[in-house]
Image 1 (spheres, helix red, strand yellow):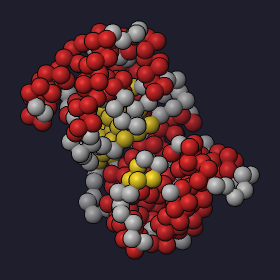
Image 2: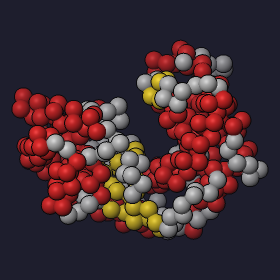
Image 3: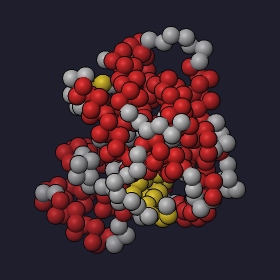
Length: 328
């Protein structure tokens, strides 16, 4: 698998503005707090534009993701032509005006030299031989993808936090994945390893998502549960897919196997002394804490499956469903 590391100014500007718009649960409040310290308080006009821009993003959501062309394409004039075809005339006027109004503020936080350094670090690191066997393990556990890909594009989005946080996304219509990061240190550090683990998490969504969802659908049908039934504010099918992938990356067994920073040990230490925990009581603690607890419970099972060359099956997924029923 070849990885091509890329970034675009327009994609990073979209990331900046859309996060400030706080239109989706995945928007990071802490990014905005840091950015606002640098760019100053927003005017009434700016806040109004963000509200309108956020409403447009909500309307199209990820099914017709407006960030797609902005993130993946470098030809800015061509990008705007494509977006103009995807939205109404009034919506395009709002989007264009929002990008114009926030240009000066974005320029204050735009640091392309950091993304350029990050690109070189990740390109070098991802060529290491120790990662070559990862896909063999994924094929064994999650079944080979129906479509074979020789390369994947990774688009970098710069966030404002120090090297304590990173995130990813797989919302680019299979074109590639996004990684939110700040400056990466080199030679290899724990943070570089964690970045690569997140890359493999998002790659697993892209390559193996359909295989995983097929098994999930069978389990939910067997238990007469609708796939879009909401738990923790999200469709149960999406939560189950996320937990399954987390049992391998970035905090599961394969991350433990291929990296030195022991991600599963951290989760295990947080939960092993808690005894029989009530997920119902954890409901108010947020999705991430519950997800990590379920990874703690499920990861040892994933390890056994992978070590014994056993493929994901109904039994594996039903184990997660039993735990989720406690939250409901």
